[in-house]
Image 1: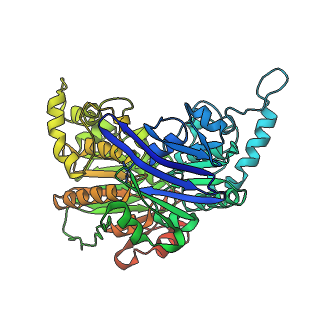
Image 2: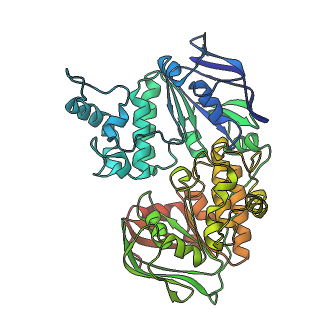
Image 3: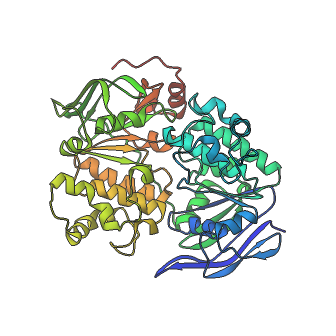
Length: 503
């Protein structure tokens, strides 16, 4: 008898069918992978199980007993804990307060017992102690943390509920390899405790590392339930998309040494990186590799003017750039696309057309905003990325995570940038969305656009770049070109085993 059984669940939002006769069942002590392309209904299904969305029809059973949830509180009381892809932390509270929010220890006066809170938080945080840094402690304020640290807080918050059914929606998207290893060890312990776990991931290596069973979704339907031991990567991809796709372009063209240098970074230093130098030529795609948090994102943000440089020069097409700001960067032909679509991407609760407009308005200095003109102007890019949406006035919050990211990407590509800074842009999006993005990247490279790609996915990085600069401790430790672009070389340099590269 499954601990959780969902049968024939359907849900529509207006004319958009999110789920149609969907089913999943999860046993005690099982890690059940839920996989499928963005927009196929995975998150909607999880929100129904968690009580935050009401189904149009269908049934949910826990321990063979029917349940009906009118709110997330009902689901929580029934023993369901959820890690959402979009984090729900209180930014001005501490790590400890966020982990135990709703179950904070109090003293006789009804105030938070800080001593007990610190003890409980320290205990539950202990497994991650060696992989997060000294600034990650029970009293740290959430707004001061890195993205990976915030994600770990959300994971611990979910685990602390001691729920018997746990749902994790893309919990590893911001974590590096060491952090993922610790998290998977925790998942193993939860499995042994008899928890039923639903795990959503777009990383197929994770499926085979921790999964027991897989439910595959496509086009709002569940199309298969498989034992992990009885399937393989190609079979899962085929079930997900209905055809075999390859999202890597294996970009291995030999760069012409006479191509013009469009970006020359000279001894650049800033927050979390020091004395970084490299050049990039026209039509090149340059990779940034290494473990998470080694300065890659900080460098991209500094080049774009989001963060200040403390030393060094940024030379664009032979001219030393002035003190950079995002406005100046846009004027110089830069575009910056972040994988953190919530904090650095979408404008929450606003129509799609408004989400597409900010960069174009700044670059073209339009005083008046024409919704019709913006919609028409953005159609070719949205079409090329296969973006799914019902209309330009639809709220961006109604889109799947992958389609939200496509809106963010389209915003930057509408006005033909010359240098594209990609800061882990495919984080949390599915294989088909990645295929759409890299198809567009191939077209951009042919037109002479130059691209820096930082990716937390090794295969994506190694197979889609001309060369890779590997970072460790805010410094470049190695440059990988040609046949040197292997996972072994990447991780050897990522862990600091190579000498700093002299550029």
